Length: 298
Image 1: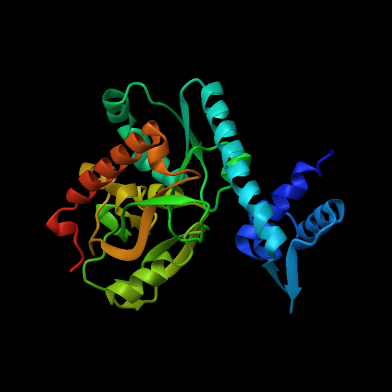
Image 2: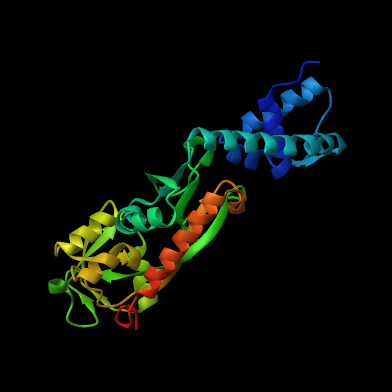
């Protein structure tokens, strides 16, 4: 007996899991119409309907439930085998996608500690931010701030809270507790960072000049060079604060966002992923503990 195409079974399985052609299309990165056509094709070749369609909604019927009981574990097993084969082909390489500024200013300077503690972990860094497609990128883990939504196919571990505050070269710091006639450096990657901080801190703002940069690390470098005051994560400016290149006249406060480590598979399914997540969490905690009393927002 000739079976229908595997793609049709995949479209059906995801639609059966989500109970929606629209959600299935989002997960498969295709159009709603493409999912609907694949399911119709499967039903035509099998000679039986798999969904009841009512008021633009779909519901698994008995035939659909019987088929889903087979396809779901089948695709889980297939994904598991493919994942293991890919892991073996990389010869121990662990690919971590990380937001560029966090990678440059926080993670890379701490990698010697990782190599010393876990010499068997061959880490390959990819600089990227925002949503990630693990299937298309071949990435094993992603370090991200939780400023976007991920669905239940992604496993997440919270690493730590985000701490933010204005930073500037010591010679350019305001003399009072008011931001007045200052050059405020804005980042295109976090366009609402200053607005959020003003709302949370209650610090008055008067007559400041807005200057825009594309990335966070450009804002931080501009602040070091005395070009204005940047809104920064403590993690991104920690080393410059310690060296005296930057000051934080208003301290740092939590902005209600967090850093998370994302994975396409449960962390306890891969011992290296688990060890890396524990190492990152430990390093983040150590960084937070270095926020001295003068760096805490009053």
